Image 1 (spheres, rainbow, N blue to C red):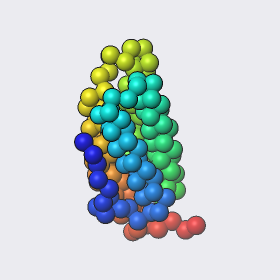
Image 2 (cartoon, rainbow, N blue to C red):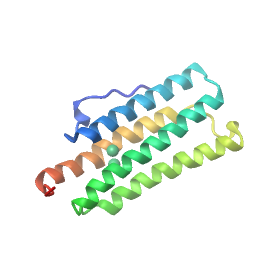
Image 3 (tube, rainbow, N blue to C red):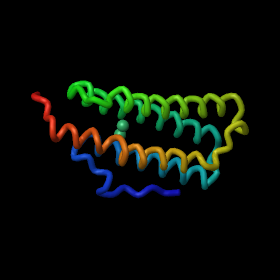
Image 4 (spheres, rainbow, N blue to C red):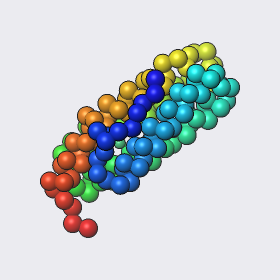
Length: 136
Ligand SMILES: [Fe+2]
Ligand SMILES: [Fe+2]
């Protein structure tokens, strides 16, 4: 399943939008690689990259939320941590034995997570920030 970047995902924050777009691209690339049946080692590298990049992106968002004293920070952060834990768990299981986690469905899971998370959680943050701007 390919996810399509579009204006419904725009938060208006340049760096965050750039990171989201890069995450779309990374997930689509991963999904294409799954379809093409790439070597497990290459898949693991792509998964590790996604995990690292997502972690970096979450730090950016959490910093903005902390700075603005965002009311739902703890819940939002938990959503980020749950995804990271899940990806880490998948990666570790694959390290033990790739047949434990068949790759089918992984791309869809990641794509669904990202699109739902942006629409449900991230857009709300940037709405709040527009209404409660933080002094530099
Ligand atoms: Fe995000
Ligand atoms: Fe988020």
